[in-house]
Length: 257
Image 1 (tube, rainbow, N blue to C red):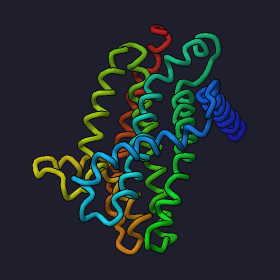
Image 2: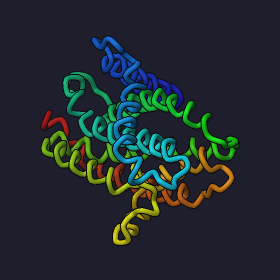
Image 3: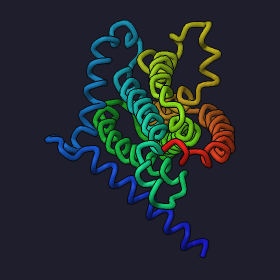
Image 4: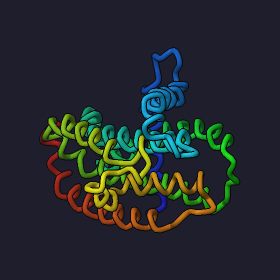
C-alpha cells in the first residue's frame, strides 16, 4: 500500500511538472531552445561587462562565470516559482484533494528540467579547458546540483503558504535575490570579496554550492569536500525548519485561495 501511494504521488508530481514545463515554452517560436539561449545571453552580457575588472588573473573566468550563472539562475527561478506555486495552482487545490507539498515539489522538478537543459551549455566551455575530468569531480558537481534542488524545495515549502496570504513577498524576494546575486561570488572570484563580507559567505549555502560545482568540474585535482559538507549541514537544518513551518501554515492556505 505504501509503495502504491509513493508511486501515485510521484506520478502526480511528474505530471504536474511536465505539464507546467510544456506550457512554459508553448507559443514561443524558439520553444525549448530558450532553455539554452537565456543563460548564454545572460553570460554574454555579464562577461562583456565584468571580464576586464574581475577576469584578469583568473585562467578559467568564463567557465567559472557560466557555472555561477547557471546555479544562481536555477536557485532564483526555482524559489520564485516555488513561492507562487500554491497560489498558481489554487484552481486545482480548491477542487481536488491534493497534498500541498506535492505542488511545491512539482514546481522544483519543473525548474530542474530546465536546469538540466541549461547544463548542456557548460560542455563546450569545459572542453576548451586544459583539464581532465575525474569521477570524483563529477560526483562533487552532481552533489552540488542535488543539494541546490533540496535548498530550492526547502525555501519553496517555507514561502509558498506565506505567499498565498502575503502577496508582497514576491517583491521582497526579488530584492533579496538581487542582493544575494552580488553577495555571492558569481561575477567576481571569492578572493575579491570585501573583507567585511567574507564571513557572510560561510553562511551562504549557494556560495558554497557554486564553489563546489566549480572545483568539481574545473579543478578536480585540487577539490575539497568541506564546502559541500558545510552546505549539506546548512540545507539539512533549513529543510527541517521549512517542513516544521510548512506543517503549521499549510492548513490555512485554503482560506486565502
